[in-house]
Each structure stands twice: as C-alpha cells, then as structure tokens.
Amino acid sequence: MEIILAAPRGFCAGVNMAVTSLEMAIEHFGTPIYVYHEIVHNQYVVKTFQAKGAVFVDELEEIPAGATVL
Image (cartoon, rainbow, N blue to C red; front, side):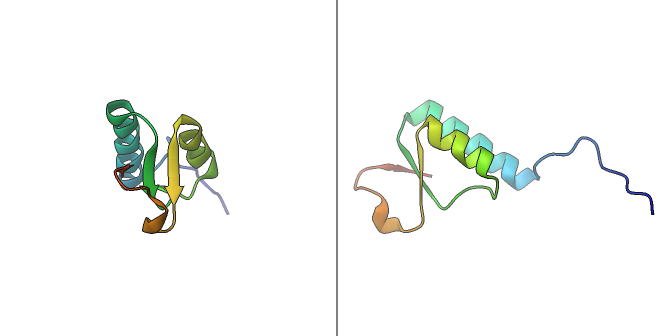
C-alpha cells in the first residue's frame, strides 16, 4: 500500500478562522480574553494562546463580569 501525504498540511477553514479571530481579539482588546472552550484540539496552539493571555474556560460562570469573551 502506498500512502501519499497531502501537502501542505494544515488546519481546516474553521480552525483557521477561530485562530485568526482570537489573534485579532487579543490585538484589539488586549488581555485577558476569556474563551469558552478550547478553540482547537491542539495543545501546542492552546498553550501558545494561553501564553499570550487567553484564558480558556469550560463553564460560563468562570468568566468575571465585564470580561472580554470570545
């Protein structure tokens, strides 16, 4: 069996949009930015955004009043 890998490999359009949206939100609003659930199933990307000031939460109650939410 021959396996051919697609090139280039990358994120789907939805993930690209989510990543771009979070980058723009951080640039425009500053940090912290609260994000309801992790935007991708990629821990490298999640940790990179956490280092930039994104705070991923699983419950809306974890978001302080008046916080910026994506």
